[in-house]
Image (tube, rainbow, N blue to C red):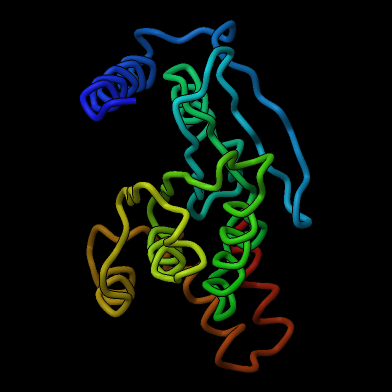
Length: 208
């Protein structure tokens, strides 16, 4: 395929995606969702009814609903409506609202496994997307040769650049979300301190 035709197809797919995401052009007749289990992980695979123009792997943020958050489902269906395959795994620790030292490595390993799976990513090439808190994990994974060699594009939405600034904001800013503060506090004590069981139980109740 010549370069001009590839560019034209890319613009058309992008226009279809934006239209579908805005709710102006979407229909279940244009896509289907398959529920798979790979690498001990539940994965939603959104597949277009017609020919696929590419694959997008999306990592959700800190959310109890995770890959079944209505906003994430809307993204997956919009991508499939536009002709893309959307691979959206459920990240257990993110759904449980934990922040852990081993998260970057775990998510990197999962992304590497997904991008090398021919059934999930035909041809071994895909775009990688993440939102909010997960952005830094995906950026880290994208810098690894095993993953970067398979990427055609990288999109991060609402990611942060400096963890110290994020922590300062959650603790001191007037507009900070108290819920986010409690989640950070729980993760800090679990990783860095040895609090009593009663303290952790009280903290869990505050979060719930």
